[in-house]
Length: 249
Image (cartoon, rainbow, N blue to C red; front, top):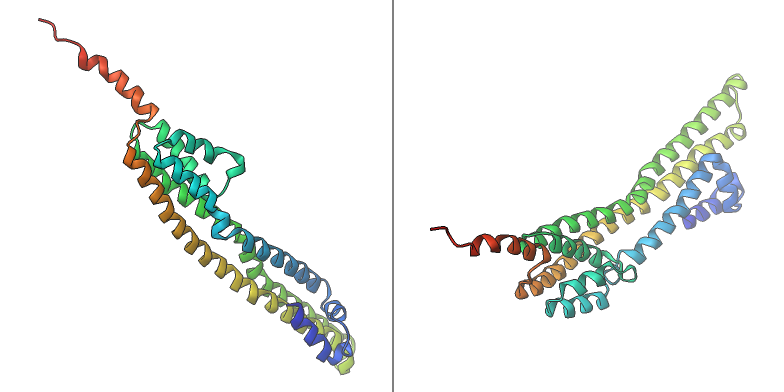
């Protein structure tokens, strides 16, 4: 965005080939708001480039540790690992929520699979929500540009009105410049912001689909051992006296 504005500032006769600051100043308050949103969008893009990565969402060390624990059938240790704050990530949040419900439920592996789906949907929705600010900036940037355009045109008509219909071009140049500059800035922000928003949404879908396969593999490792959960043990203990009670003669 800044590169485009620098080029326009150099070529614009209204700014005398001046700096980008003169071009921004020509756009008034609206242009300052767009510039602030531009830096915000840039910061969000950098943050998402760091966060929406396979290594950040499902670190290799977390996958290896859970693989070792679940291969042994040690669901308790796997749950403790997922709940530890140092291991917090997309993968451990899903596995932690699933193993927690697995331990509390009497349905065992059936509850594990259903809870994985629910936790996975919740975490994907959380990632989607993190991109909403970028989508919001992409949506309002053109409207801010249009607002500046309207303000500039209103100013131009006011100048014509005050000069009784014989305004010179140099009298209208400032208002027309404001109208064009804000439109340019709004579109220059909206186009890359929209592209980034779409890119990160698609990237989330792609990476979480791959992590979903990894989670299914981890669940299959636990399924091989068919560990009896505390809830199942309690249920079996309640049913055992009824089964061993001898019938009366």
